[in-house]
Image 1 (cartoon, rainbow, N blue to C red):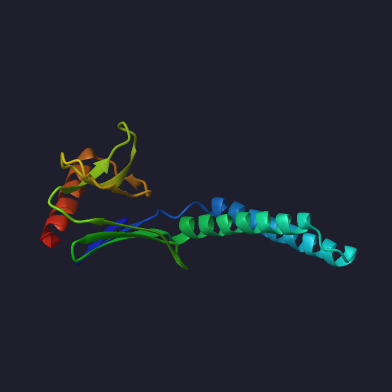
Image 2 (cartoon, rainbow, N blue to C red; image 1 turned 45 degrees about the vertical axis):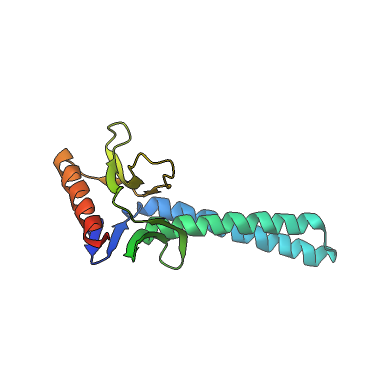
Length: 171
């Protein structure tokens, strides 16, 4: 599986799937949350009374469950899709079952792709930023997916390829 793929006006950056034991732990935590929620529902029915604490407990368990579902789907088949449409660069985090994290920025001549090396650590990420000196700089779009290559030459080529991709679709 290629981690980075450029197709026309789309750039797709895929997550390396997490190890099986990590996904197993996430599923076990989600299962325990579901069992705990069922236990709270049982207490509500058994006590024949509805208390605010039951609803708070279910709300907290629901939010934690949603978080674990997102983490599981992201670590299984998450990807970031960057699309150039008109004069906009659009970012979407795709979890496999739903989309989230929608961002967009105006595509100008000053937008550059940079491979961020985080102080020369082995994991790097992609950042699209405005390198102009103007007062109206816009926020950049940063990838959260860690890229892993063995040679620094690959990063220079990747950065060059991404900037060539951006230049093709600029005004």
